[in-house]
Image 1 (tube, rainbow, N blue to C red):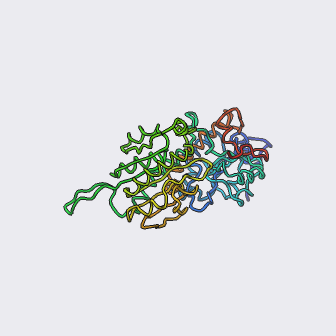
Image 2 (cartoon, rainbow, N blue to C red):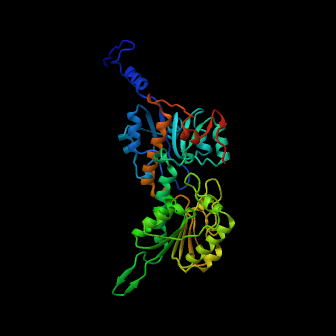
Image 3 (tube, one colour):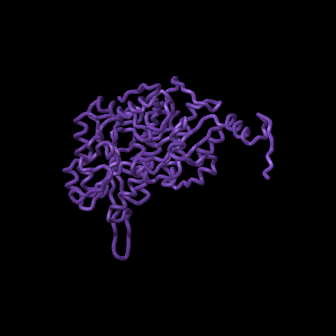
Length: 401
């Protein structure tokens, strides 16, 4: 005979009431972390470190089973941090959804109307913005955050570009059939590899630093004269294209940390210098991007034809058309005896650290849209929040420039 204990309605000792009361009092928001479904995407939008902080703030966190496996984070690590492991529907059905990439059609169908979505959603994808708006999703694209001091801790472009620049050099070294450093051996001396880096933003500067650690001789070029000191401080030679007019000098300053399209005459002079230096280089890494536009062509086919046999080009702009017209997105091809690497997600190839940095970016952004009572709030007077908001209440808020 099973002995049953009687409980008074509402009494705290009743297990069911304890659970209900606990959930009612503790869980402020339901945060979902789904498995990224885009081909080749190994990153995840949260880590045990950030999940633990969300739980400490009073949120319920559901992580889709296997979401962190490709980033070397087992489900057990998320559980130990206080998350619940669930299905795709469980994670996508949360009030606040944290992703790396924009949801596809199948994912979007499982997101509840009114849900808040935070991720790298590509603010220049007009069609995707419209689809998210039609699904009544409130979406924040983190790439749209202004390049200001206050926004540095949530700058996903910088955190991921830093990793991409590092990985670009390793990919180049992998495909280059010679040593990177100079070696003096009993069998003779091996010359150091000559590396040319085009574009000295976050990715380019990290590529310079990594190639220097591997012992290469490095040259670098950039539109912005302000980066000359940074380039030289990392041990590379700055390739200077003089400005002949005040207009060229003004445009070269860039906007918000980004380069701007330069006048045709300056581009011609830069192309001549790049052609000369690239034909003498063993490895060329191109990193030039202009937000929302097709990547500028920096390395012409004629230049590739004249490069040394066995040379390597890593094109970090492959996703936006490439800095070289011979680059094929997501492929490694050989043209005119030169290997061209067109990986479009280099950061995702270092998924563990990329996820850790990205998750911290997301955590810092959420501080702007979650108030002191741990509840979602939308403050459009905050310049970062306003810049990142893509759609709300079925309307596209920010049109691509």
